[in-house]
Picture 1 (tube, rainbow, N blue to C red):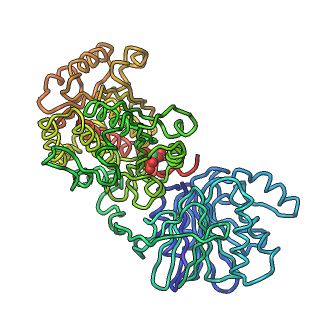
Picture 2 (picture 1 turned 120 degrees about the horizontal axis):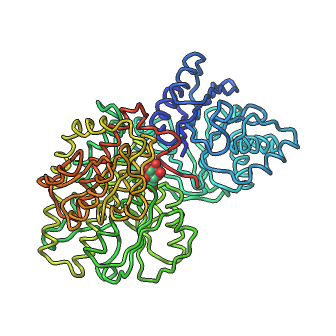
Picture 3 (picture 1 turned 60 degrees about the vertical axis):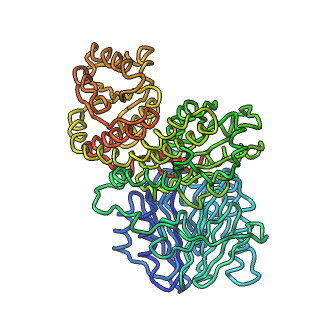
Length: 617
Ligand code: G6P
């Protein structure tokens, strides 16, 4: 949540900061701002509420220039999205600028104390308090160079706060010098030639460098255009390594697509293939997941699995529960990360925990990972962002390799997560009861997925026409059973997230236990009903909705034309192994919500109130 980019180098910082913010906008977009040091012992600040375009206009009308600066795109936590609450924040002297991600829990007593000492605040944010605190420590310690005074002031101030932070600070007395630190909010150092960067996400800097250092919690970094130093916040030494970023700036661009979300939906033939590429073993009719760091013996000893995630990742985890239980017969549970971290579920030593996260930075998922490890469990990650905190802290795992996902509503990460969970279930299953023949069949069907996804994508226009038909719907129900119950939940989540209509997902048979009271002529129900073991049951439920005049959109398997006599609209997906149907059935739901939201004039890539990477509780 919230995006930061800082730059120090030889060229004008402003375009670099604005471009970086553009790439980080998915992290928050209710206000933005930048501060630039012009070398003349002055900091120029521009910030305003609203989208980044507002900041561009502001900077266009009141330009700033300088080779060192910092900037921020905000997702409001403390204080409404106003000009004053936008970052950067200045200290009392106006010579120190700070951008901050995270939450300072004790900001109120700190603010009171500073006010009693004569500080005046212009915003309601917790972050401004930290700017003043650092400024105060800077003024109080007059020993040493301005640069080291700033470093000491940051250290002293961070020692007084409770909460989380990813920060970048600079002081007008120390031109060409940035200080950053992190605890709980990501911060990456980008190493260029004669220029260096700090950012919340490598996506902001890949246009300039592929060499990055992912800071750890409690790391503090200070940098000039040619040099950097990483220590702990407390002043100790900190080990780091330089990683090579494996994606290009182009991958994080929209290309010819009107929205990132559509681009990412259309990438799925390739991203699903990336998830299984090199991981299928024909000889053993199984999968190879070397990154799990577990011996066959250890894998055979697993008696229970817990899958943890938030949002879309938790829906993928639910598919995982069906997959692992049916293919490997290992009792599996899904825990929402925010619940898991505060519950105290009894887990015995043969329990394996998986955390699922696209960003690898979701705070609740990270906390769940740490809680699991604290109790002595091995916690593995299924993560997309290479080098992210969850990827680094987990005891092993697998990367999705689906490339940067920028659209706030997750799409390709879901199908990649489910693909990986299928491989996991296959691997565990083949060590237990799953036959060679069934393993081979699943492998065949996995390989066929990209082509099948492609054929669904070709129906995009037909799905758009269906969306237009229901454009005035006040809400939508999504229903599915077994493997496709999580698909229904995910379909409802997509619809809510980007079109702002009320949508809810249910196990189809639950309809009779309450939801049917909602059915009316104006409320469409979307049934995910492929030809599987519960197909007939789903058809009966559709009849029940139709008997009450509820419009029905059905997603079913090619050839199941009998459903046309009950449903108003039918979307066909190719036939596949029952356990793989969610990977196909979710795609029409993604397209339906996309077209529906676009037709209603919603900003699908940046839905209101949401952020892609939720790094605060
Ligand atoms: C946010 C996003 C969702 C995402 C969830 C988990 O709520 O808006 O799209 O599914 O976080 O994110 P993660 O990065 O951990 O998969």
